[in-house]
Image 1 (cartoon, chains in turn red, green):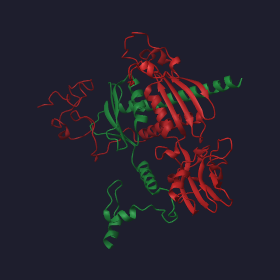
Image 2 (cartoon, each protein chain N blue to C red; image 1 turned 180 degrees about the horizontal axis):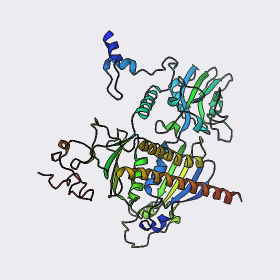
Image 3 (tube, rainbow over the protein chains, first blue to last red; image 1 turned 45 degrees about the horizontal axis):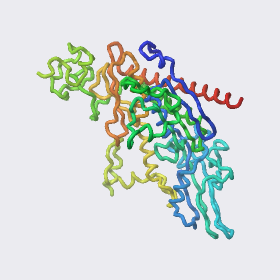
Length: 337
Length: 160
């Protein structure tokens, strides 16, 4: 950013800082500092709901003599985490040229189990077998992370019962359905001592005694006794705890999240450049921005809230866009006539 | 029936209401045939996806609202929300040439986000918006770099 550092706080001029405090195959805990709450929250929201992953979306049941209903099993299958490595090269089914689904936009999995023994049989995610061509050898494989190598339990079969089905897994985002969420949970926290008073603690007699301190309380200076409230203070350090559901490693969730924001922005920049900044529709009757006279927009003056005639420019004598000139009320000097 | 057919040949404007007579045909998912009865609850999702696709293909996602002037403009973003709105508002407000910037989601059941930008003389609201988008991209680049750095440093400290 090429803004004058003088207008920023000293700390902010240094730019954002990332510190990782814990990382393993299921979670990454990190601190983002010298950033704004709005950006940190964008990152949180994007990691939660907008990172593409793959999940079972269609189920064709051939045989189901289990006690569970078809749609119940379909729902359970949808929620099984599938490996999303290489999801970038998978197309959204809606963007694919094929009719329905093909290997470029979906992964097929089959499940066939019959209980032939004397005891009840457990059907696990590992029994879901990817079939047909795939973009790579791991995309769409059920995640199995337990020690026994079984994966999530799908259903149980009594002796003689059988389940046979075919699933089609598609690419999607958690904004559409939570089954596409890459993260199991995202911890997001700032200001552990509540110095900014963004939180109002409920308490019986003493909030300090009743509320346990945050795990990050030691990272920040506790407030001094009798310290006056700093109403100019803004949150500056954000503590993330990104826990993966297994589809993507936690660090990839973070970098993919930022990538999704950038793709959003790139799309908008592209569109703005394409339309040359003139996106006005002549026959548009939707919401309007606040009016002040009739400017260069060619809009009839009869639509202004105060009914001033369309022949006066808001630029003449009104002081342009001074704080008082751009309000809906203070357009021309003769607004009221 | 012939009446309904004649109607069908007329070009239907995108986004306009569909006649009741046409509803049965146009609202059926196109690929009903190759889906068995035992499908997941995807009929609705399919329909939703197709709508969204149409929107992305035909409709511009950023629109300058009427009543705007070069230095004071409101923009309407389709299919955006607080995720983009708040970060964009912050980064545009950081621009010293910008007098005012705010965003709003006028109604929660419409996927629309409005941004108001007022600039000082010398730049335009559209330029401020473009600069804001680019600055936010740069911020993302920096945070990505910092995160990758931190990850490598963490990996180095834990392995050694």
